[in-house]
Length: 314
Image (cartoon, rainbow, N blue to C red; front, side):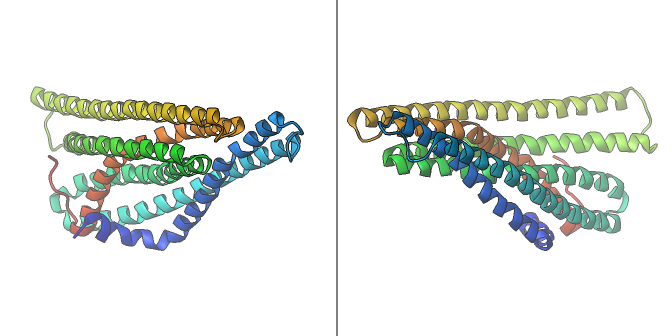
């Protein structure tokens, strides 16, 4: 039995309408943001044309403002829908896990309940991040590749190669973070368990106990730093990939302008899309890396639902 698929997925089904609303507003948001460079490109084309553009600059400016407002409203509704879906889904799973732990956990029910609550909090925040950032930024990254391909097929293919390499780098970083995140959770569970027993009178305060608490706290801090280090290293490599792919796209675009295959206004549009791409691509890769701790906590929550007890940390 898969703790994620077989035990957590049923809790998501009652709230799938919120997920559907969030995805619908995601498509609207991405469409509006991908359309933002178009009126700017039209203004540049009109300024460089002998007889002016087909539409006045004021109309194009109004279109730009309308697209920006649409994107803002769509993002607001998207975040509300995804927050509702993530919050309700994880809350239902948490309540079921706590009930199972209280019934079958025995002497460990107190520690297991604390673990379930912590895993649920991390899973909820992680799920919201995945839905809010991976969907929007992922669609934007590959949408920009499609938009560039409409201007010039080679530009789109080069940017697509860069996007795929970005995903590979992010997935590799996620694998490393996942390994450290599992260790980090184990250290946190051990520390929380010691504090819980100490507060409940199960441990006598002496030098050995204090030394153990400090050691476990230090282990947790080391693991937390390791997670941050891997996330930072992954983001740095992603920046390099984006810079390299943007340089290749601009060189090809400039060559296309020199050869007459592309107008100068189109090259301006390509540059605008590269600006649109950079921030979402970084957030997309970073969120892929951050899915690893989410999966660790979600798996433990699923185990609590299905078995009523969690394996000992480490």
